[in-house]
Each structure stands twice: as structure tokens, then as C-alpha cells.
Amino acid sequence: MGIGSFIKKQFIDVLQWNEDTEGVLAWRFPMADQEIQNGGQLVVRESQVAVFVNEGQIADVFGPGTHTLTTRTLPLLTNLKNWDKLFDSPFKSDVYFFSTRVQTGRKWGTPQPITIRDKDFDMVRVRAFGMYSYRVTNARAFFTEISGTREVYTRDEVEDQLRGILMATMASSLGASQVPFLDMAANQALMAQQVKGDLTAAFARYGIALDEFNVASVSLPEELQAALDERISAGMKGGMSADKMAGFTKYQVASAIPLAAGNEGGLAGIGAGLGAGMTVGQVIGQTLGNTLAPQAAAPAEDSIEARLEKLKGLLDKGLISATDYDSSKAELLKKLIG
Image 1 (cartoon, rainbow, N blue to C red):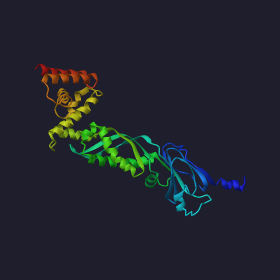
Image 2 (tube, rainbow, N blue to C red):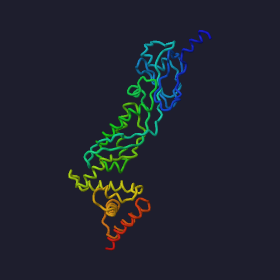
Image 3 (cartoon, rainbow, N blue to C red):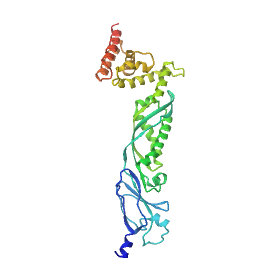
Image 4 (tube, rainbow, N blue to C red):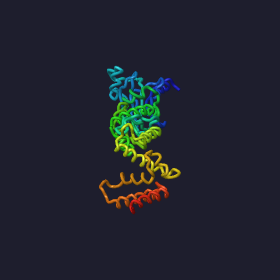
């Protein structure tokens, strides 16, 4: 092998990234002791961005396509290198590739409850989890704020940072929204919409666009749920209004009924969980009457018939046991017949 061939091999003619490793968001082209050939080719694939960095300072940014590297296509690097005329020799520069593909199906959750101020319960601690997707849209900001000069920066590493941003933003946006917890629990899309707006702005600072964000579940910690039950049964000495107390009771009933079918004894244990001294029949009857029946006044017979129909619907769906259905039905029929 001649000296000319050896020297030629030290020059880089083509710079490209094949993205052969899953989950990598930023990758530095391995330069070693090599230099980039003047007039060399930079290949940037779809869903990629390439950035030239000179001594830690970002210079030129390239989108998808094949680019010939000259002073014309590298104006900022040319200025940093003080090339006042066309250069005709190889040069050194760090080249970073960034993946701009949408990272889908990413999970988020609250390992610890988030404390927020609530108009109904003053202060509550909320747990939630769901899914989100994102992508890198500003390579300059992403390089400056997050990835830096690392040779490889992965999706897992960036999500460790995003997790903290997500939790802080969620606590702030929910606390400022003035949306009661009961409404958030009943309408998770409302909660997702509220959080996504603030989260989009927080992510943008780091060159990341939030593509999708949803809430799969929102709940209270068990100990807080038990404390609220005890407070209600004690007569709410702290001063919850009758409307708020009724709303919380409705929420408990709505949460308890779907779980009853999977528990031994059906709805038999719901009354104790409510802590309000109601029988199962009274809970079902009052809840159906207050939350499912039309608000306009109706004849007593029609109201009871409607309750019976809804009660039968719960039985058909397997949400209550036959024993619960029979006892509640007997109580309603007794009121109907007198």
C-alpha cells in the first residue's frame, strides 16, 4: 500500500448515521484523528438533523438531504475558522446527528403523590399515570440544554430529565387550574388537556415538542382516602358543605360499584367504606335517584320504576350480585306499594 493511499484513508469523504441502535437521540460522528475532506458529502436522512460544532460552539445545522461541504454550505463554520477564502484542505470539526422521529408509547407516572390545592378538600395528594410521545425539534436547544458533548445520548437518559419536568409542571398546572379533584377523576381528558398545555411550553425550552399526552388513571392514596372517609363520618368538623359532602359520596359510590363485582360478597361491604351509616339498598337507591334520574320533579311511582330499571341494568352488567339486587328491589317495591 502506497503512502498516498494511506494518507487518503485519514480523510473522511462521507458523514452519515445509520441509526443502528434503538433509542438513541443524539450521536457524535467518530472522528478519532481523522479530518473531514473539503468537498466531502454529508448525508442526513429523513427524521435526522446534523450539527457542526467547533470548539464547543454550534455552527451550521443541516436538515435531511445530501450536502457537499464547502465554505458556501458551511458559512458559520467558515466564519469561526476565519477562512477568508475558499479552503482546499481537510478540516476538523465535531459533527452530531440527532434523531427527530416521534418517540411513541412512553409511560409516565407519579412514583410519589403530587400535592395540590383543591377547592373541595383544601389540600389533596394525587397519583396519576398515562402515556406520552415526543420528538426533538430544535437540535440547537437540545444540544445546549440536554445532550451536550456526549458521544451518545439515549432516550432513557432524556426521559430521566423529562420525568422531573413533568412532575413539577403537573403539580403547578393542576394547582393553578382550580378544577376540583372530583371533576378531574371523572374527566381524565380534562386533566390531560390542562397539563399538556403547560407541559408543551416546558418541553420547548429543551428543544423537545410534546406530540401526545394522556392520563390513564388518577386517584387518591389509600391513607388519604381513609382519612377523608373518617372525616365525613365524623360530621366534617372541618367544615365541608352539604353539597361538597354529597359530591364526595357520589364519587365514592361511583368508584365502588365497578369494583364490587370482583370482590367476594359483591356490594355487601360498600356501606362500611362510605362511613355514612347507609345500607346498601339506600346507597343504590339514593345514588341512582340523585345522580342518574332527571333533575325535573317526577311522580313517585315513575321515579321508583326508573330506579328499578337502572338497578336491573346493574345486575345485567354484573356490577351487583343477585342478592344485592333482590334486597334493593324489595325495598323499592315496598316504597312503591306502601
